[in-house]
Image 1 (cartoon, helix red, strand yellow):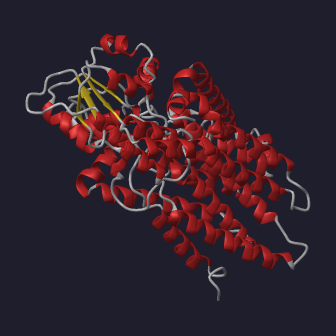
Image 2 (tube, rainbow, N blue to C red):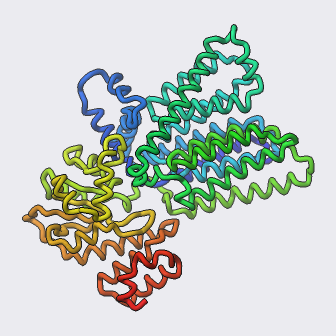
Image 3 (cartoon, rainbow, N blue to C red):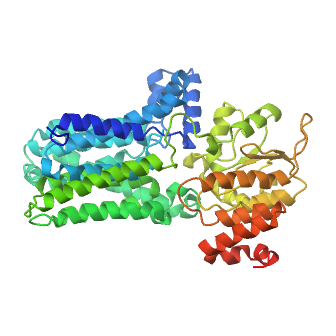
Length: 544
């Protein structure tokens, strides 16, 4: 008996592999924000534990997930958090595997390929955030929705409503689940319309469904309205940008959808309605990068129905498809094993968090008024137990009004005036964009300003106009040594940030290393010549 014929053995094996490859070091900046909120939740003594737990249910940051995360981290450590994330990922994978239980063995390799492709793309979103639980709930809800054509509508609708109510306490995306259920029922459930026509027997269920559809569409409309209204501000956050801004994710995302849609045209009678729904899911998922995994997962129930109906008229194709899918799955596993972003392992990825620099601030600066990078605000809250208020952190609702001024300061637009406006006396910054590799214009302002001495350059740059009696000011040359260290780290990750080699050329130039600087600029010009005019002053000085 081969492993493909033994479904239980296959389920156990692939679930274990999915869990193992999901053990990645924590790099999400929201991790620290949630830890702080969880700590704050347990420190609150007013009211009952239940009222606190659900007091913010359905909001952008509910209490439930931070409380769970803080409990795990505080009692068992960051490594166990990584393990828990992997466990939830494995359970989600298992749920979708079970969902495809009716697929015949001859189509099983193709089904496993669709699963592996989906999880390979979504793994960038499988981090310790509330979405983790939402992805698992989405899988469970869709399993129940797929069983609806077997009858017991009222019971299944009640269970789905209860799961969506719980989902609402975990994450704001609960209405996605409602939309996905309705989209599936309208597309795939042949007896769904007969059920709707039977109004006398199912008035309550019908009213519930129609009300749910209206609420779902209204909430989706509201989300997109908020997105458009706040477009300029939200675009400063990478995950709120359209997916097509990131070709390294958009291309595989598009190819996966293309595969799923193409499978429908291999059926004896192409499922045009199903293709239309897949296309709608594709567009909606591509519109905001952070939602792409939700919509990609939503395609799996539809694709499972396709594979359930798929037959191969040419039997000689079946072995070819089987071996081709097996090779593709093996390739995916190899790519994950070689992937450094995110890095496989347990615990924290310390390269993305200013652990030592924040320690320096906490020990040497009393109640600083701080300006910080967006993704470091959560760690400031956590490390200081809320005693130091960051200028900005990952909570959109709390910081949306500051986004404009944050962007102006980072990009050195009226920097001095804005820093004075907010009475900033300390700056903690990485100094370089991770995705583009461009040095913040703010760094050049701080480098040339006598008002902002450099005090620390460990894993972040600390500038402060306050006097530190126990420490000497650092030579600002260390800014560029720090930059080279960060650039070397970014070069070791996946992707190829377009400005990174130009930034390396600048850092070497500022350190007086002219020949290495010329080499870096020459490599940058060969790879990204379109950016030449952005760095024209340096290129002219170096003779380009």
